[in-house]
Length: 321
Image (cartoon, rainbow, N blue to C red; front, side, top):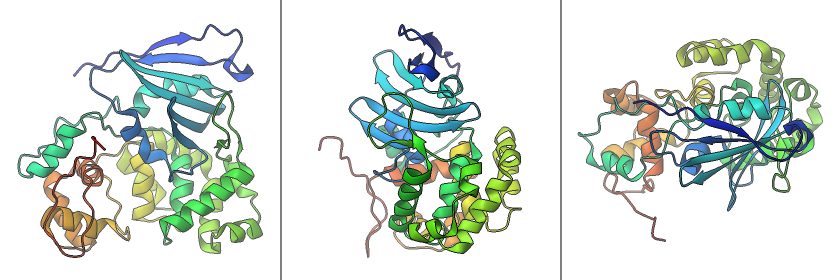
């Protein structure tokens, strides 16, 4: 399938994006793109200071190699309009197609053996796998999420971003911040990690990773499997953390978060009506090797909730509510 190239334009406001004006592009893909479904994976809960969904569109802050940027993406009749502000605006605008799944090819995924999943895909044709191209952006929050509840991890993330991140450039919604640089993460004192609820093991892992940030960011140019292997050579980074990272940095279509507290049981219930462990989950997903993350995303997008006792997945349609 041929994808139309993005049509970049410059906002008529005078000046440079770093001075407050916006850079603008309209991305007109040949396939359907649902911005909210595609970008949701980058948001760490509804209170994440780096992501926000408003009536204006989906807001995202990003620390690019060229500096901080704020990105706003919104659906338009003839494509997706993206606006960016800040020193990293050009970098952010250039990568809008990848961020919205331009390289994400679902054509090889066969779902005829599972009609429920096929129906989820039919109802969500615009859900794409998003590639940020930024390893550290995905790695640090994944480390913070290790071995704790989602609520604990999100509270820690929000607190640290608000203290050590910088205010988002441009007209971002109030309270939005850009995640700290690797240098800033390295300087967070132990007592602030403690106040945020991050234990010494996880904070040491973040600091150690940030000491190698330049080398780790180069992994963004490697394939996802190579990047995951490199990540797992670092102390404190295992299979789960590597998968959670490459799912976002590389749009890895096959990365499965083995070791997740809930995922295996959720997949098991959805596909068979019974809970399974990690080995059982991998066995169930094996027929879709190469597309296992896509299948997981379909399950998570289905509206199916893990029951205490019950049948396999039935599709719930909440679009009319």
